[in-house]
Length: 95
Image 1: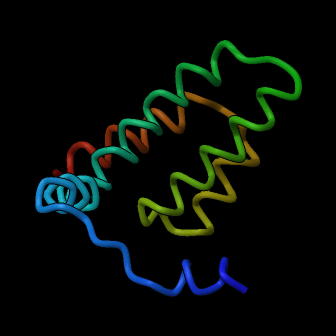
Image 2 (image 1 turned 180 degrees about the horizontal axis):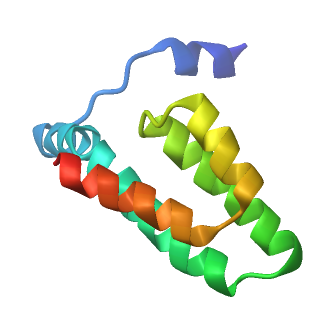
């Protein structure tokens, strides 16, 4: 029972920690775009099960970035890292 009561109490972050958390969430789109760009390079080099896992991650990141679901599904079916690189370029152009 003691474990349950611990989770219900709000965390008290220091002002410094609060700033870090705000900056993280304020830059989340940039962080996700950067992760998608990294995945492009990894997809070119990966093989087998790792490649399948990376494609899943790329799909998740694109969804988080607001890429339409139909386009994400199309890109995942194509399995062409160059097409993902184009998405990265488009996202960078929007900034």
